[in-house]
Length: 88
Image (tube, rainbow, N blue to C red):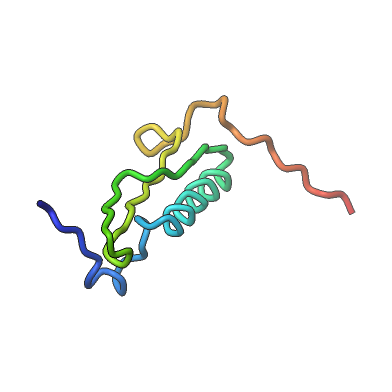
């Protein structure tokens, strides 16, 4: 059976597979595409869980689901409305 460990990765790569990291990654994706004028839908969900009687060794892997297709946002119907600048 494949054993998944995080040893050695914490310093080099941000953690995107725990719930908090998946939420942060989903937010980054939405913010990136919003800045380019698109509204992208994201959600997180658990995809793998290892449970154990000892809570320290149990963990869940989370993933980000979105409406991106091939890494790109949907067609023009998902364009964000232009933001009107406030008049002084």
